[in-house]
Image (cartoon, rainbow, N blue to C red; front, side, top):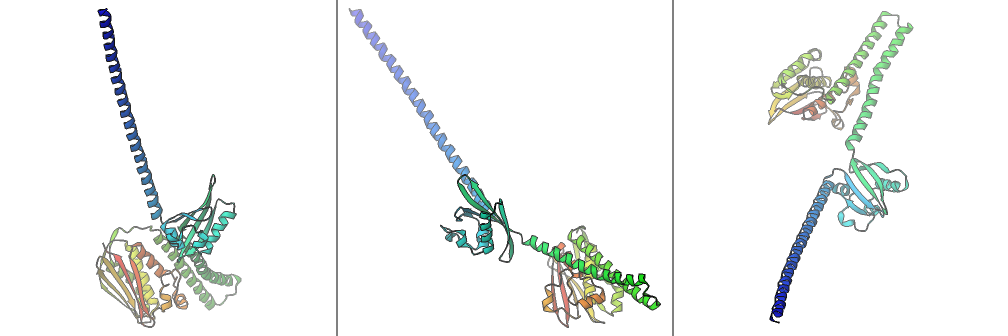
Length: 392
C-alpha cells in the first residue's frame, strides 16, 4: 500500500511540475505577444506620425507655391463660393479674405468682364473660356475651366498677367503700320516721277535734272530708312556682344568726324569735354549712339548753334551728357521722343531727311547696356540728354 501512496504522490508532484512549466511557458508566450503587439502599436503610431508629417509637408509646399505664384489662382464650388484663392487673385479682384464666408463671387467682385467669363463657362460647351481683361492698368487673361469629379462640380480660374505680350503686340502693329507708311511715301514719289520719265512728259533738260534729283533724294531717304530699320532690329536681337573696352571720348571724336560735313554746312560749334572708359561695351554701338545724338542736335538747332558733349564718371557709371542750344522740345512731346518714328517737327524732319528712328536706336543701345536715359528740354533754349551706363 505504501508504494501505491508514494506512486500517487510522485504522479501528483510530476503533474504539478508539468503544470507549472506549462503555465510558465504560457505566460512567456503571452509576454512575447504583448511585446509584439506593443511594437506593432508603436510602429503604427510612428507610421501615422510619418504620414501626418509628410501630408503637412505637402500641404505646406502647395500653400507656398499657391501664395508665391505670379498668376492668380481661384477655386470655386458649384455655388460660386470661394474654396481657395491665392494672394494674387484676391489682389486683382480686390477681395478681402474676411468677406469670403458663404458669399458668391458674383457678390464679392464687380468686375463685369470677369463675371461674364464665369457665366459663359457654365453655358458654353467649351472645356475652358479665355477672357482678356484690364485690371489696375494691367492686361490680365483669365482662363476659366469647369471641372466635374463624380458628384463634385466647380470652377478653376487662372489669372495671368499678359501686359508685356499685349503691349508688344500693339507696338508690333504700330511699327508695321508706320513702316508701311514711311516706305510708301518715297516709293510713291519715285513711281510718279518714273512714270513721267517713261511717258516722255519730261523733255527739257532742266526738268530732267530737277526730277532726277528728287528721285535720287527720295531713294536715299528710302535707303536710310531701310538701314535704320535693319539696324534697330539687330540691336533688339543683340546680334553683337558687349565684351570690349571702349573709350567714350574716342568714339565721340569718330562720330564728330563722320558728321564733319554737316557740322561745317550748318556752321555748328561742337565741343567735347572729359573722358571715360567702358570696360564691357561695343565700339560700333557707342559710335552709332553718338552719331544719332549729335545728328539730332544739329537737325533741331539754328545755323551757328552749339552742341556739347560732356563725359565723366558718376560712381560706378559712365555719365554722358549731350546738349544743344536749339529749338527745344515741347513738354507734351518729351515723353514720346524715344518712340520709333516719332517726330516733333515732321516738316523739319522731312527737310533734313530724318527717319524718326535715330533716338529710338539710342534708347535701345542704352537698354542693351542696362543703362538709363533722360531728357531735359525747354522751347527756344535747347535740349539736354543724359545717359548713364555701367562703367565696370
